[in-house]
Amino acid sequence: MTVKTISSEKISALSAILELLQRHEYEFITISPASHELVNRRPGNELGRDLAGIFGWNRPFKPEVAGKELFALLEQAEALDFDGNAWRSRLRVSSMAGQLFLHSAFPTTEADAIFFGPDTYRFSRVIEQYLALYQPEVRCAVDIGCGSGAGAILLAQNLPQAQVYGVDINDKALAFAHANGVASGFSNLHWKNSNLLRELQGEFDLIVANPPYLVDASERAYRHGGGLLGAGISLQIVEAAMNRLAPQGTLLLYTGIAVVNGEDLFLREVQSMLGGSTMQYQYREIDPDIFGEELRNPAYASVDRLAAVELIVNKPAR
Figure 1 (spheres, helix red, strand yellow):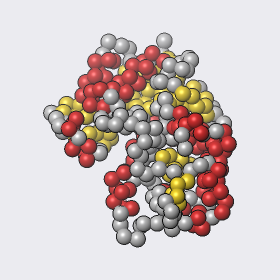
Figure 2 (figure 1 turned 90 degrees about the vertical axis):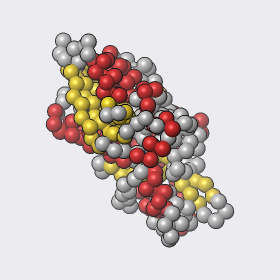
Figure 3 (figure 1 turned 135 degrees about the vertical axis):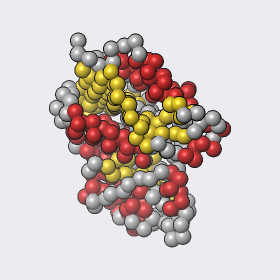
Figure 4 (figure 1 turned 45 degrees about the horizontal axis):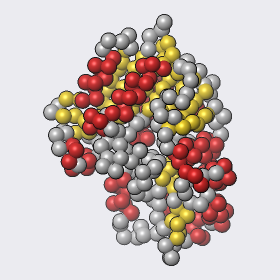
């Protein structure tokens, strides 16, 4: 299912899959790729025997397990592969905050794969905690690099008075986000292909982002964060937000950072960027050790650890 083949009819089929799964009270918490692979390798997990097996664990399955209606929708969405013995879904579905989200099949090896996992759940908690604590007045919000649309949909759910934009450079991600948004039922969502905020006009009361932050040899869009050991895109988002926040607006950034010889390289650059401005910021480490297996990557030969962090940047009133 390539970008060019995702028509409005297929988006309708994708959202219908989610609506049918919601009627079946489907739920699945998506874990890290390493854990997912480990669980699927266990004896007895060769085939999907229920909806979680099909759409969560993404195992091969027989048509009768899905049922006629769901199988037909998967065919309509061109979201099925057949290996001669069993079928396999080209997409997965995860649950979060009462909503369902389509994302890419396992493993996420394609350059345009849409990732959903532990980072998405941490990102959602960052958003929910911020909204609950500060109760901001938001008229216009944007999720940069929206991927599956999880951040934007969470904002639309909690800020019904706001217009919420999800932007990404990955057209396939935008198609999945659109389908996820349709299934959510929120009417204040808008999706647009944009590199950062370049294709959008105006200022924003709230900018959120969960950008890629790893060094990925294949430079997959959802993983590769660019320079400074993966912090490149995160720093670009900080710079873009400084120029596009409305007075009293906020950037809420969840990202991963590299610590080298005890120093947080991302924080060092943020302090340099914000040092001569009127912006105020808060910074905290959420998880001190994430994706530890990445330290085997030669690019991280000098890195002590990878950590998940939250950066809040506030623009003062005029």
